Image (tube, rainbow, N blue to C red):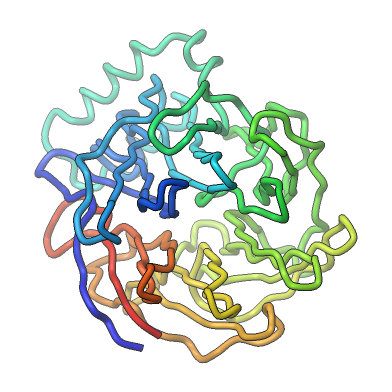
Length: 353
């Protein structure tokens, strides 16, 4: 592999940072990246779902537009394109969770910022939290989007396309008490939709036999019609030991989860023009950065690990996703702290395999 160029889509401006991006090609041929921007910290209430587009294959990007600025924290931007329809996803945390995080992880906030966050959270009403808390999606054309609607599942990069439908593999959205607003049990599920508005009933995967906690899945459709799934696993509170588990959906049902020993997460898959599948994932164990593997047999086997980047200064890095450029190269987008920046930027890298 060869790294060709690097750049930023949204950089830390000394006040706010940008996190958890996804990238895709829009119906008009432009590239689009979505992410949670305008943040004062990894967990804070000021996050906004943002989008930036490129009409020159990622060489330059538009100034970010805001897709959603709810009263809550608007995390994780996901994007999926099916024909002329573009589905974007995000999710929110409760005020209680954000307050607890404010005191649990101060993360070197500037003086007065904690009080500012407390004051803002105190201004959010119960009615506003009820309206916006949860996992959300909206459908549009890549420039304009409709109403954000609640959905029962969540995953950083959102849905995929299977045949002529959206397929969303995600974890049941839970509050900090472990309760799903949709009445689902904890676990990984999938659901499908023709239009991104009306969804089928979620189908649950079995738990991992070793009891591993699984979240943040992504998937791709195989040539035989099955769906290959990967999910993030980590021990409670041990985020630098994230690893991947694999599974498949056959005949409408999940199989058993298989641990892989791959260090890093969460996953993102991309079917390349030559039929191979690219897997990218973040590594939050030193050396911090982004890694990749290739499969030529729809996930039955994977190449040796490729290092796309290892210049991140700390664990707060990752959530990569990829798109193939018209020249055949790959553009991978992720977030990380750059140099001594206090908060993160959304960065990209063009590379060839």
